[in-house]
Structure formats: C-alpha cells, structure tokens
Amino acid sequence: MQDSFSLQLPFILASNSPRRKEILTQAGFQFTVLPSDVDESFPHEMILQDVPVMLAERKAKALLESCANSLVLAADTVVILENEILNKPANKQEALQMLKKLSGKTHEVVTGIALASPNEIVKASDSAFVRFRELADWEIEWYVRGGASLDKAGAYGVQDFIGMAGIEKLDGSFYTVMGLPIYHVYQLLKPFILESRQMPLGI
Image 1 (cartoon, helix red, strand yellow):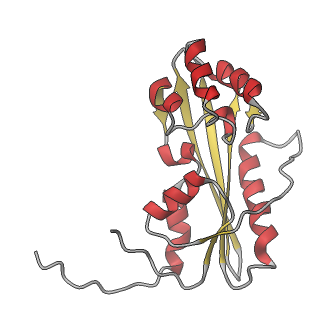
Image 2 (image 1 turned 90 degrees about the vertical axis):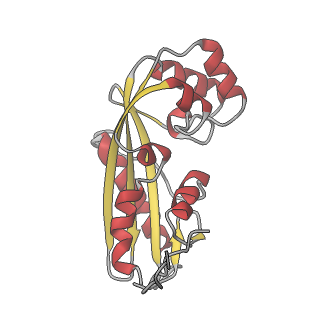
C-alpha cells in the first residue's frame, strides 16, 4: 500500500465528489471531507473559463472560519460547449439533451481549484478539450438510465462507459476532465509537505 504524505496542517477537501476523493487518495494524501455548500450562480457577462476558479474560491472561503489553521482545497468543474456552460443536469431528460448536444463535437472542460491556508488563498485552473464521436441514441439512453450522469457537469464522467466508449480524442489532462487537476493540486500542496528521509529499499 502506498504511504501517505505528512502535511504541516490538517487537510480538508471541500467536496463530496467521489472522483476528487479517489484522485487525492491515489496521489498519496490523507484528508477530511467537509463539503462546502455555496451559491453557484455567476454573472452572465463573466468569461466562462473564469467561472470555475471563482466558484472554487467561494467554496474555500466559506469554510475558512470553521477550519482555522487548516488547508482547505476546493474545486469546481465546468463543461463549455459553443460558449455555453453545461452544468449538472437536473434530471435524466436534461442529461439526455446535454449528451446529444455533445455528440460528435469538441467541448472544453475547465477545472478551477483554490487552496486556502492560514495566510492566503492560492488559485489555479486547467483546461482540456474533449471530442465525442457520434453517439447512438441507445448508447446515451443506456448510460443515462443507470443514473451516473446526474452528478456530473455535462452529464458524463470521463471514467464512465460513455467516456470510455465515446471519447475519441482528449487534448489535456484526464484528471482535469475527471474533476481535479492533480498536477496543479500537488504543486500548491508541495510547500506544506513534511519531508521525510526514507530508508534504502535494499534491492
């Protein structure tokens, strides 16, 4: 089993996303999950690629008072198609409509992150471009029927059937599309990692 990093401060993930929890755990971090429930509206005139960073910062700030002297990581992911943000679908019918829009087209996925520490909030974002092949109606319906589309921006998960079988090209990080650009997260967390001297492997 992989060892976990030791951090200078308690580490909190401000998200209940199973994908983000999985990525952070696989990367070697231990953390407490404390979802941040905030208003996710944004000004209509805002540059769409800036929205996830703003929302991530809003989520991190919402926990600062109750999580003093901690590291709080928040994230937000948006799917942008033809200058429109596709959020999490409200129901299966909306999920069907979203996936039919994405079928045969390239869209942008932007994940923003914010890391709050006792002294500051640092932010970053990452973009990836995803192209779906032409999806058959029955493939979309089969996927949506299972319910996995309802808690995901754009109504799909890159790690799910529709991602595995439907994405023909991905330009960027798989983890950004999954919901957490772990390369950027690691860079933000690296200053807080307590270095340890490992014993020789003896091989």
